[in-house]
Image (cartoon, rainbow, N blue to C red; front, side):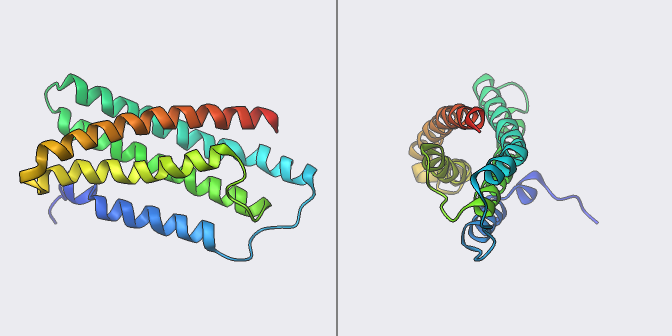
Length: 175
C-alpha cells in the first residue's frame, strides 16, 4: 500500500465538501431546536461555548502560524504552510459546526448578533483562501493575480477572524 501525498490528503475538494455538508446539516436540519426558557438557554450556551471557542481559537493560531511560515520562507515552508492552514481551517470549521449546533439547539435563528454575520463571512473566506491557494498552481497564466488574491484573502481572513473571536469572547462574558 503506498503512502498518500500531502496533496491527495489535503485536497481542497474534500475540505470544501466536508465543510459544506456540515454547514448544511446543522443549519437546515429541521426540528432539533428545543423550546427553552431564558435561564436554561443561557445555561446550555455557557456549558457549550468552550466547545465552539476552543477549536476556533486553535484554528486561528494554526492559520496565523501558517501565515508566518509563508512569510519567512525557510526550507520546506510550502508544505508546512499548507499543512498548518488546512489544519487550522479544519479546526475552525469544527468550531463553526459546534456553533451551528449550539444555536440550533436553543433557538430557530442563526443570525441574531454581529458575531454570526461576521462568522458567516469568515466561513466564506476560510473556503475561498485555500481554494485560491490551490488554484494558483492550476491556472498558470493567471498565477500572479491569483497568488495576490490568495495572500490578501488570507490576511483579511486572519483579521476578521481575530475580530470575530473578540466579539465572541464579549458575547461569552455576557452569558
